[in-house]
Image 1: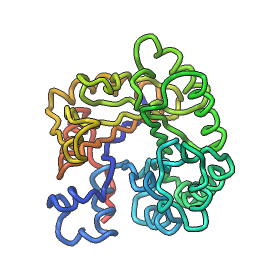
Image 2: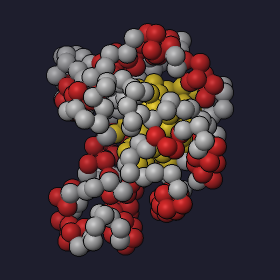
Image 3: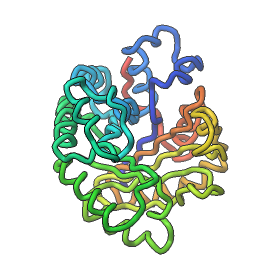
Length: 297
């Protein structure tokens, strides 16, 4: 049976920091991470989607967490085909992005340079054995088909040697007639499939399909079940407090994943106040897991 790790998709979300979840004496940058790591064994780094990471932060993350803690790091937006503002790049790379005709990031040379900087900044995290996986979250316009498969292969080639997990936002990837092909493609790429929990009543709803596509890892991300997904503000999109009954729907699926993968990462993205940490604690209880044995502060 593989190890199940439960955590949240951020430890620095403003709503969480203002919720009162962090105790007195643990509200500075170091204290927050040390406290979080005393409660959970995995976290997702969301900020790296919006801007390139820094080597200094990677080093500090490793220093402030126990040896068995894991960071899942979201890939920078340009690397996954999302629109990217030039200001998100270092100044010397902005002219190259501004020259892109149409879809940003189509120049392989620019993508290669961005990847080198992105991965280089994470080297210390990987060397310290704190890196769980890189999470490549692809935009909804990336629909199943040959061009999309070719793009995924290019992403994988660029990230050769790095652990990779893939989350699709286009629901077609996990519809019944496409499941086998999607599973086969991710298996070929040695990339972990990210299963998602979200509201299922919208055209953009991604089916909650859970598949193991690499023996190393499986990932489940809980986005909440708000009907404002895709239309509301960030707070409206992710405002949801999971009930024990909703979480219990997933416990047999998570255990099945753990029977096929060495690790399963269960992460909560319903980041409104302390809803994500409360849901993570509830899920840990339902799975019969305990808080990390060794605290970090």
